[in-house]
Amino acid sequence: MEQGREGWPHADGGEDEDQFDRLPDAVLLDVFNHIADVKALGRCALVSRRFHALVPLVDSVLVRVDCVIPDEPPPSASSSPPPAPARGRGALAHIARFLLGGIVRPIQALGQILSPTLALVSRRSLTPPPAAAALPPAPPAGDVSHHSPAEVLRSFKELRRLRIELPAGELGVEDGVLLRWKADFGSTLRSCVILGASSVSSKPPPQTTMDREPEELASIPESLHTNGGLKLRVVWTISSLIAASARHYLLQPIITDHETLDSLNLTDADGQGVLTMDKRQLQELRARPLSVSGNSHRTLMPSLIMRLWYAPHIELPGGVLLKGATLVAIRPSDDVLKEGEGAEAAGPAGAPWISDAFEEPYQTAAKALFKRRTYSLEMNSF
Image 1 (tube, rainbow, N blue to C red):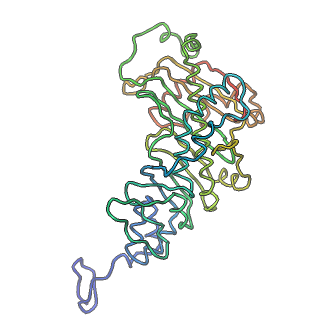
Image 2: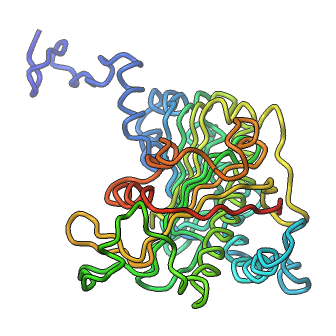
Image 3: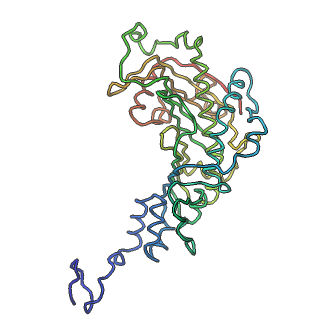
């Protein structure tokens, strides 16, 4: 028995043994699960018949969406006005109607990304589902491939952990404005936390009387009511809820196709918004289908109770300064009342679902805002 070039034995001077053949399937699947990226997995599936058979059995997948180019805008986009909140009343309803008109195109673009009946257009070729019986030829130079995440994921039979990353958040905000949100869903919204700031800078403001006031006694300044600041924060809140409900609605076919899913995260490259669902919430959606908001492509929002914290300035580690920092915690009214918290709260201040919603340095901002006095708001279903 001779020694191969790498020190491995081979018989009678034949070709070196493929060392991957010495690895058990469980080890290869562990490697593929660490790779996770669906494009990389598609390339792995082209290496050998064995890889081609194993890739569809991975249980952890990441789908990165590069860009979206809608083929045609839906006919309703130009021929009919954007949908308005079904049951909203008063000032919030007017703001919501105004806002829906402003973000209808981003919501349509999101539909182009996730809906299996519409086309995802990638700047780079997206490898077709690895378990397909025959792989189509590579596209010509300059061409693109058309696959929705639902189509790409259909070949994965043991999927348990799924993360989808959009190319950007749906909500256009001005330069320097901070807007982050995290939402948990079952068949409907379970909780949402929003963090916003009118500007982010590295220069601390001059010391003022407000800064010297004890944080737990500091109230929301009167100027927030008169300069449009409160209205702006309501717009942030409604726009974040609409973006979250649109993502949730468009995930339904993926959730239906993959009954083995234990967790699902839908985020974006900007870090603007994160939608999460755990195993219990995924099962809830399968057992109790979501309710659609009118003719719009989003999940109906239930009646909500919100708490709003505000601080004129918050300094974060590293000298970063948030101006007009705002934290909003939201839960369905029925859930809050069932738990005996009353209409004045959206959950106890400092609860983990609020304080753990964001990573540093924004977690520090959330904890600082907890010490402030709060506004309590209610919103009808929309």
